[in-house]
Length: 572
Image 1 (cartoon, rainbow, N blue to C red):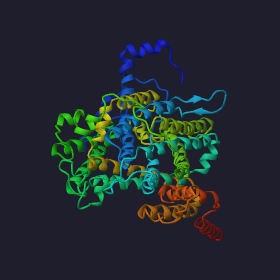
Image 2 (image 1 turned 60 degrees about the horizontal axis):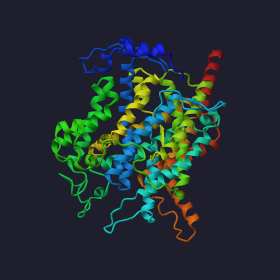
Image 3 (image 1 turned 90 degrees about the vertical axis):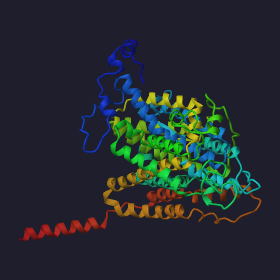
């Protein structure tokens, strides 16, 4: 990336053209009201290195940040809640996710050449990274195993205790396994794309999203903690707990209604909102849900409309415990490597590499750049290498692996701006929000039903992205549809079955001897088999590699019939 001359920088900062330009801001902000709105001509498309006005870059970057923020705060909330960490640690992890995402996204966009080599770090596109959803199923299986084998404590009343050491083991294991993706990045891009075509990536992405919808629906009903089982007594006999204001049993109408309000708001914004609003539909849904929950007193005490809007007193506990200013390493964790999770994490990084290839391809396409050739292959290589480095650096920053986000491609398409200037503004906003500790406290205070309505929609969109990739597999190889169907059927058999009956592999190994290495190996296999997207990925990768390509018999029949018809016509 070249630095512009000082004269150009001065012109940009001191002229109206440099700040505002001739961009049609009304198009960006005008709602689309059915039967009333007139179609407006969209603004011109701004390419990767286009010289765009500062205000356009700022607004586009802000929209990218809004599109990302729900996906950035959700994984740390889910993981920290699974380990029953206190609100101070949960708030810190949200801030760390935002800050690290901002810095590592800037690395992906900048694209550096490794010294005196043909290799790069970064895609050089408007590519953003965020906390990966792929880690959540593996981490959930890992945490469940830790509580069952005594690594994490269980309270005397049977409830699960706080276990920060498990989180340290999570990021420590992630840090070590990140080198696997780094090494894979030096393979030729053509080999990677051939080994992991859209069919493989699509199955993986589908099961990542589908497996996470369950946690979203549990929150939608009132919470994914102990109250989900609807105990008749104890601390979790009501959701979120008996000490919360207006607590109720899991699945109560007020909880379902709050989540449904968020769900409907997202749909209405997509239907009638302006391009800017549609990019932030998930955030708007959250805001509406929080306003209504505050007005009705659901889970949130002493809440006024102005306090909700400005996030000054969303929740007595979470906002009070959150610092005004924070940064990385304010809280640290004991880094260890959890042996049984090494193999599952290696598989997870393989999945992250697949996602990086697919997302980089989609970003190049929506940015109206080439999606084949040497330059594109170097973007793939640089993106995968930066993705692996991001996994290592994010663990050093106390966060789970960061990977390339796909939802920002929709922002590029809507705003018609693929300029990296907008991306750098997005990075600035992310770091700023992460440093402001009260912002993370406000996100942590979101009522579970409101969060569940949003995350259910968000995770479903991930699953739909997988289905889209599966559809591309049939389109890209129309002569082998039977082979594709067979491979997908084999993968879906284990994946869907695992998804519906989550404990089907829990009793596969009954070894209870003193050989810790063997016990750890069995635990690793159990995590892989018990995680839907991992077992499905294993099946689809193996079958795609060994099954021969054959021309479909149905097409041969059609060709024979056509030849016979042609012969009859000639005889006539």
